Length: 369
Image (cartoon, rainbow, N blue to C red):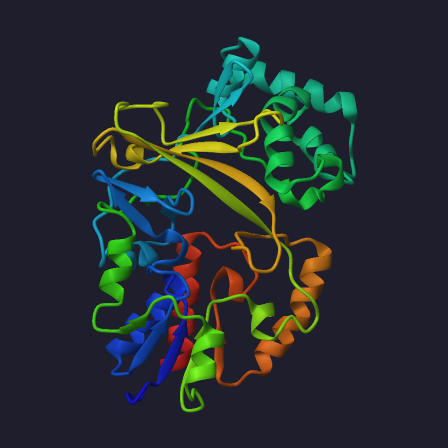
């Protein structure tokens, strides 16, 4: 391309788009390349029948950082959606996170004292002082009933392994509340952008050149990038040609169904299925994120599965083995003077959206201030 760019931004998700937006404000020329056929990364929403479908899983914005909240509100008005998922085990329905509604349904009790007594008695049955795996960790925190009905099957589907084979750190803490409060997050600011997340990215990239369906490898092969600084949000191990081997992830497959003759399929945006025998982990009903707008309804079933190179990665498996491998790649990344690595793939870290914004703004500050 004949146009001269200061930055080549690889990936049009939240990190890359914020960087491009802030760089443009400072008079820099950016080219954003995106391997998918749309901008937005995993927060991309597609409007179908007036419903904003979260194409890559539910994204619910929440933060306690007022500066982050003010920043993202430049680009969209947020509604007051509060995440209050429910869980189905066999023919029983429970509120999440674990709270007095959960315990009242499970044990027929009414008071926090009754709930604490049952939980402490169940924990004492096992008397686990040094948990060696996720199962022991869960039993030591919440006891048998909640673990077996609401944690075990869901977790084994999510990670594709028995809870006795999973490290305890995955659930080092469990949200347990002795109040009748179904608000999943404790954060002060919560909501969904009215009109979906794609509009946020469109505003960030307004006036920035974007090439879709363009991989980093393909662009590099066809263009001289020696005069551009790179902002890389792809897989850090892929950038270095898997020199030390591939980092591990879990991936998610979505089965989305448009139901034109049904206005309300499950009555809630997020319903978890905690039985091991049910193959999907949860069903998302997208219209409920924006309080029932749109014609009919649209649901997505989520199936967690093993990942391999070439499949879209979702959740880093941050066990000791993978963290040690990432440290090797991190050392290589730190030595790349002309490259800024960011995002969940570039940093091999699961980020909530507010943390992506914090990290992107920190990278901007380091680069330009």
